[in-house]
Image (cartoon, rainbow over all chains, first blue to last red; front, side, top):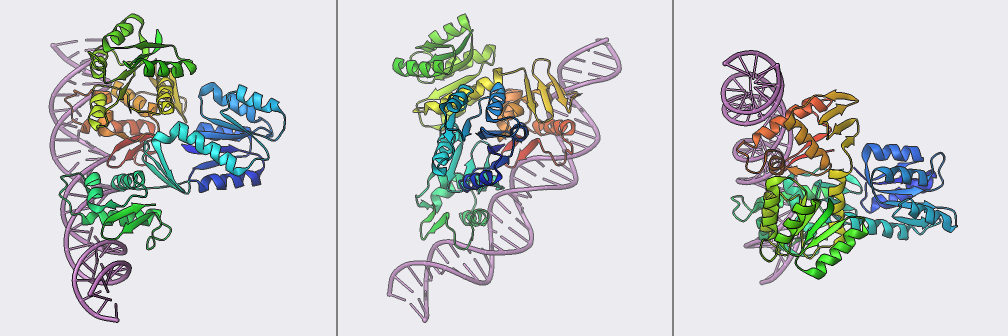
Length: 220
Length: 220
DNA sequence: TCTGCTTTTTAAGGATTTATTAATATTTCC
DNA sequence: GGAAATATTAATAAATCCTTAAAAAGCAGA
């Protein structure tokens, strides 16, 4: 399932928005028309839709009401017109939020963050462009899935849940491998190595999974 | 029939929760003890029960297991304690979900919404070209019926109702075969195999029923 | 800078998990 | 009661992951 589907006929604007959302770690798909957006939604599903009102063919309201017939996926309506009618119309049709063009990207991002937090936060942890879906056990980096093993997933989850804290190796090992594990603690460092390989820009100079000399590791 | 019965001995908390649920349009009844909850359930019936664990007299687990003797109405267990024991206990007894106090009301509401959507929204589930008729217990792929056995149907239904979720083998097994099944968990993988044979383009490279290594399976 | 210690890096063998298949057991339906 | 359909088991094959060990590199204090 996608995170966000953006339906916007102005290609440039759509791509700009996509880029910003991706930089926040969301998995974003872009559609240029209402029909295309609906098709995308039916194929892939999404956790949030951002709909422009003014679209060729089926407009944002049309998409909104069509979606509301089936389910209540969050929807943000984006409108160019100034009037209050659009806002009422949008909210009447079941949109969750409304923003007027031209909008401040930060405000839109805040709305998106808010929706994800309220609706999905129990299942997700996000740090910068890294997002971890606890339920589906997916990890996304810059909106793209990174495939990890079960151990790697558990390890990263623990690190992220204790962000900023220097976690002793022994603690990490106990929590992930179990108190009575027969393995050597050495194996932990190897797993850290693979995680860095998958998550860091430059694994030699990690920026997320840092080594705390003499202690263990810390996620930033 | 009521929509939701909330069993919670803290009156203030119970009423707060009721209010929120009612605001979402549910028909909610409140009970202050396990016995009262069971009585209400027997009198009126309900589509969902939200059970606090800590109750005077019969606790939430007691109510849960009593209900499970008759039917499989969805149950959400609410526990104040921090330990994982309660969670295991709850899921073991057949609860559908579990949440810890203090909880974020939005998260509970999301769980409730999810249960209603999955369980009561329709008699059909459609994912891509796969359609599942819960009432007639038919499965259609690209519009053509695929004949499946009862086990296969239940398995696929559970997977589809939890689309996107990595479901541990043990959970799947418990839900389909029953927690007290004598069978080997191995039998699950064989059924998955037959399902893939019937549903996947290329059973060797499944696109719908994916294996999550070290965990279980996930429907996409 | 040197020394001792800690951490990183590799790669290969071993261990574990899952897939496959066929044979056997069980259930269902006539 | 018997045949057909379904479920389960068991054994083997295949895929994936984990661990180990050893050498290289890095860090900290003298």
